[in-house]
Length: 358
Image 1 (cartoon, rainbow, N blue to C red):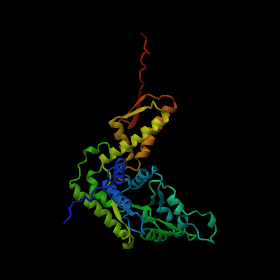
Image 2: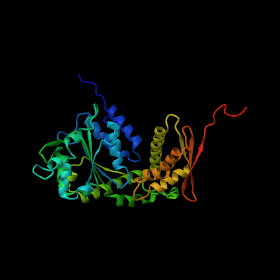
Image 3: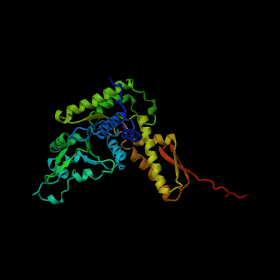
Image 4: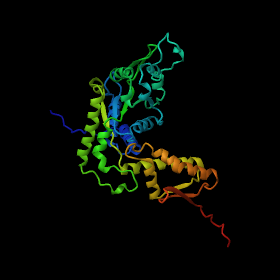
């Protein structure tokens, strides 16, 4: 007797993966494809189906500066471990010479200073951010195209066999690690594709949108980034990459959403500084436009947005609180003087019921 055949849905995710995807979408703007690929690899790990003897996932992040490559790794670490700093970051620009590799793996016995050299990529460093629920480490190699040949040789072993031999012959296991490599390769080609829709000035709403259909545009962006990587990196390196993720340049809509997220962070800081009866902060549209104009541009994306918020908003608000001009319970309104391009701060003090004379 034949059994009852039931169709299955291979696109469904488990509860943990769905929760991770939701958390990442709250923290990362404009990079839905990157989020989905990370979640897919993590779901494979949760199911116990990761390839044996390899890292959980090897990711190559491509795209222009300020599109969120590093922020995505930090957001992943924060979502899984509760700490966005639980990432081992390797700035490859610091390892352009072969002898500097000792900072990563330690000096071998017999070399001067051997005992004083502590390997950055030790097993203890990988395991230090484990939690009871999540035993995964996150390693980020930033600007990978600047790495020396010595670092490349180390990377090939880590990406393929998930192992690294330190200077004192101890072995490090990367089989519970997610490896991320970032590069700006392909940024110029992507900028040329999207140039009609990019605009970071206050009047950029007048810039006409790109005429390419979204699917065609996304395909051309992926091709531009991938081809740039293949021209720069060797086949043996590319064959060790599990996912090549191309990050889209950010348009005005995405930058507005990022500004909203950053303002929520500023509001939390104000609440922590002023206690329960926190100061409410409200930005006008002109003030938001000024922060976007000062903090973003076509070359650096959203990289300088935090600095602009610190300089134009956080520092003045700090002065207002420290000088007693702002007190807990006040409502702060931030507007923009467009003539001189600066923010204007005003407050509304709550009226105490019964304080007026009868």
